Image (cartoon, rainbow, N blue to C red):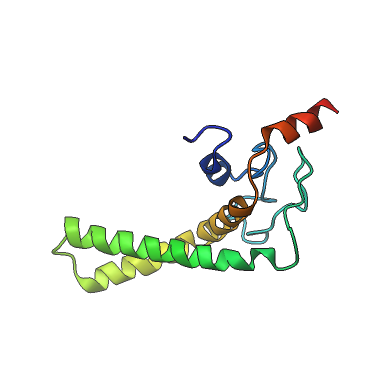
Amino acid sequence: MFGKGSKLYSIFKMKCPRCHEGDFFISHPYDLRKAGDIHKHCSKCDLKYSKEPGFYYGAMYVSYALGVALFVTLWTSFNLFFPAVSTTFQITTIIVLTFLLTPYLYALSKIIWANLFIKYDRVRHSEKINQ
C-alpha cells in the first residue's frame, strides 16, 4: 500500500509521480525561501512537472481540503477525548497548528495535485535507465 508504485509512496516521500525516484521539490517544505518550489524536470525520468502554465493553481483546492480535514479532525478529537477543554483553547491550538503546518500542507497539496494527473509508469522509467 505504501510501497513503490503507489500514489501514497510518491506523496509521502515527495518523489516524482511517474518514476518514484527523482525528487519533486527543490528543498524541504520548511526551507521558507524555497517553499513549494519544484524542479522543472525529474532528474531520473525527465518528466516535465508543469504540464502547462498555472497547472498548480488547482492545488489550492487540495490545500483547502487538507486545511478543513485538519480543522475537523482536531475539533472532533478535542470534543470527544477532552470535553472539558475550553473553546478558546481549542481554537488557539487549531490556529497555531495550522500556522505551523502551512508549509507542509502547501507542499503536500502540490504533490497530491500532481499525482492526480500523472500516473506511475515503471516501464517508461526502466527504458530511460537502460538508454
